[in-house]
Image (cartoon, rainbow, N blue to C red; front, side, top):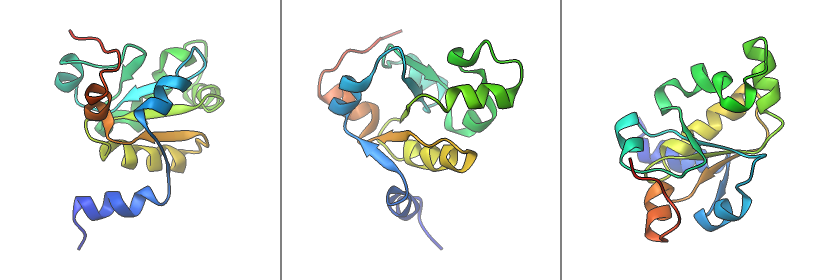
Length: 131
C-alpha cells in the first residue's frame, strides 16, 4: 500500500514542475492555466487567467476549454489544446502533480504542475481574483 503523499512524491519524478514565479513569467495568451481545485476553493480566490476544472472531472472536461471552442469534436479540441503549454495548479501542489501525469497519459506533452500550488502563489503576493 502507498499513501497519497507517497504516490505524489513518486509521480513528481514523471512530470515537470515550475515555481509560481516561473508561472507568472510564462503566462500569456498562448498558455493554458487550469485550476484543479474544487469550485468552492476556486471561488475563494484564484489566478485571473485560470479556468476551473476540478481534479475529479479534468479529463472529461478539458476538451471544453475556451481555447478550443472552435473545435468540432472532442478529439479536435484536445489536439488544439495540445499545441499550447498547460499549467496545472491546486491548493498545495499535490493534485496538480497527479493531474499532470493524467494529461501526459492523454497525450499532452508540455504539461506543468505548479510547485506549492495556490498557497505558494498567495505567499508570494502574486495577483489574484477574489470572488
